[in-house]
Length: 98
Picture 1: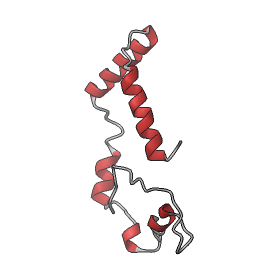
Picture 2: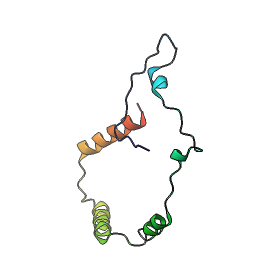
Picture 3: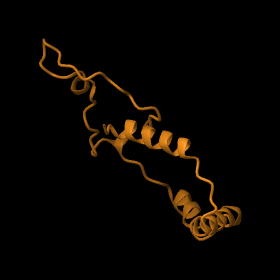
Picture 4: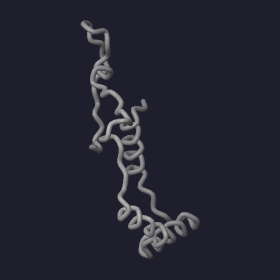
C-alpha cells in the first residue's frame, strides 16, 4: 500500500478517440476488499502496544495544547494570515475544489 502525499493534477480534456476525459482515463480501479493486499490488520503485539498509547498522552504535547487553547481564549495567539491562506489553498487543491 502506498500513500501519495502530493496530489496528481491531470488536465481535464476529452480524448476525441475514446470520449473520456484525461482524468477518467488516469483513474485507478477501486481496490477490492477481498484481495489480501487490501486488508491490513495488526498482530496481537501491535494491538497491545497501541492500546496503551491513548491512555498516556505526551505531557509536552498536552502542555503545548493547553498553552495554545489559553492564547486562543485570550485572543493573543499569533495568526499568520498568509500561511493560513496558503494552507487553505493547498487543501482545496488536494480536495479538487474550485
